[in-house]
Length: 380
Image (cartoon, rainbow, N blue to C red; front, side, top):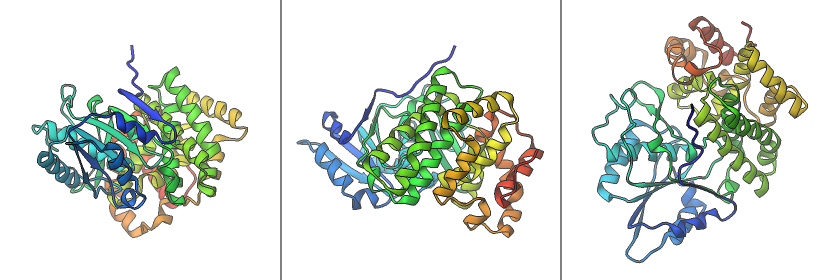
């Protein structure tokens, strides 16, 4: 028996989906966002205008970085205690949504600490505050998942917090938001979504429902991401916005794999953009995982549908999106890599690597990490 959850209360899609906010009842709402992009593009002002009610208040909490940290969560929790919202709007990239999820969890359950949150049961930690997620980027699908990834600053490592209680109540996918994204963000977040879809599709915990969502997301992203990157049309941005959400629905029910395990190790250590690191690692992982007969059969099916080899197709798309071929090409020096190798190796064995379709030995992981850093072909 398996319980499948694709979204909590509602998923609102289509152009001008933001207008759905007119239906939200509240007394005080806090908008959690990242830097200044949502202010600069006028999205914050539009949200405030839509949310305007007599005797109601909307306040802004900004400054969440691309990799939300424990310190940022703690500062946000203090802000929540001061403002006491009954609605939280997580608006922006996946980092803002991830941060808002954990801020709410710690706000409503002060007994939770960083020492316990990753090991204790969170099944009874329900939330009273309504959480509405409005992504401005098209990659993480945090708006429909029960997962939040936080960077532990002292350890320089990312870990995921998982509980159904942090899945947003309402997700709003308005394609007018990602229309303004710079091309390199389109590429990185889009490849994050493709990684989600491909890892969910081959995960042994998947099923007919997650396979269908993942497969459609893979096809859609492979077709529309290059167009979204090069042309930035509203149609292409809307397609990717929807497909990344479908990928999120798939992986939140099926699981991920070694790409995310290794990506969190590198990203947490060097504060790298998550989607970029995923994009680099993805084809290496596909070459590794095709040793499994079931995985190979699924790759063959995808290749038949796409009319080209799926692994070569991913490599080709990386080139089209100007994604570097290896970690060394994004500014991490060989000296840094060798200095931190043991730590990266240890952390790469954690997280989603545990549910990779092939059990990864420390010996294989050591080879794999060298491959993705130096750009060496995976041979095992």
